[in-house]
Length: 164
Image 1 (cartoon, rainbow, N blue to C red):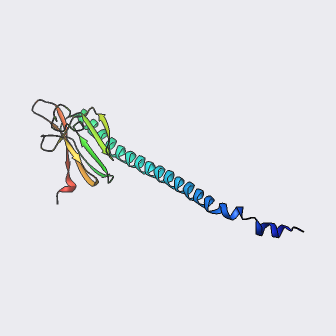
Image 2 (cartoon, rainbow, N blue to C red; image 1 turned 135 degrees about the vertical axis):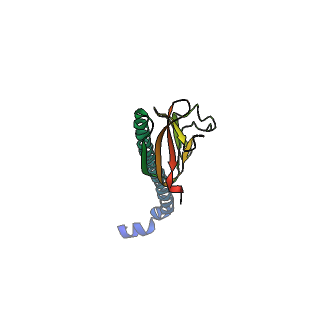
């Protein structure tokens, strides 16, 4: 007589297939972990882009208002730039030396991705000698509207947090 208990003890097909099933499960779990890490990385990058865009739009909004009112306005902003971001006001990427021509342009970099924009205001550093670069971290930025020798209203930017 053949009982079911004897059949299980004799049939080893399930135990032979167990290592292969474990390998498939580990590969599937690894694939899911990779997909999850890519999704989380993308989400973090989108948040950094959003935070940088918020800072830039705050600077640009103040600068455009100051530019339309004429020379003599001063605004101080307390801003935080994400750790792998950089903002350049008054220049185009890889062409910071052409400052007076590109003074209406600005861009920011995040993880080697460039986001280029144009403003109604013209930007310069506090010395009126070039563009203004803001690196990552906490900054106290002073914007001042001044008139240059040609009569154009420029928004000068100065980082007061670097002065100790």
